[in-house]
Image 1 (cartoon, rainbow, N blue to C red):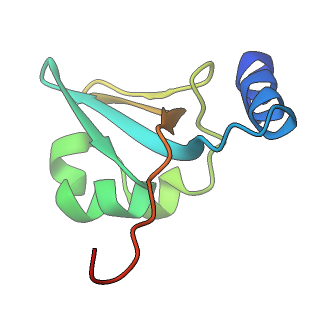
Image 2: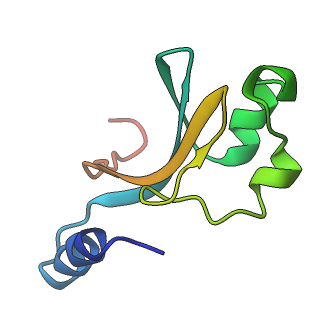
Length: 94
């Protein structure tokens, strides 16, 4: 579920014609360091279960969010939203 303020940002972007790109991001905190991934599969492909203490098959069944992170003795995993500036499309050959 998306935060109310994230929903508001998305709504205002659409309503006002602002074409920001909004994407989901997965944040991993392990050993005091922070890493960011586009999805849980990418995170789990990079980190073995023995290091983070959890498998992809377990994580994909959880409803991880900013308010409800996954936490164990080895890591913290959160899901959030990243908002980026729109890309300018260039014509081929410019």
